[in-house]
Image (cartoon, rainbow, N blue to C red):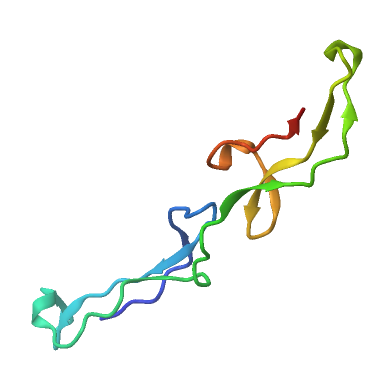
Length: 117
């Protein structure tokens, strides 16, 4: 006896997503009498009792350092002394796919330099 599929239920989150699954009762029943018996007494393959009800699971996002171009040489303030020159660039942790800026802690490895003398 195969029951009706349940409404969607939330299962554990994977990679920040919230996949859904459905369940149903699958019992081996004796005919006549409609009495539940051990699964081994039924012939054929037992039908699935749960399925994912969402689209195919997406791959987990990756997080990478995105590094901009170095600026033209800039002059330091007087506190540096001797008028040294330095360059700057933007360094961001971004999520792939999507190219969304996220917290630096999500990127692995050392953060590339954002300024040099």
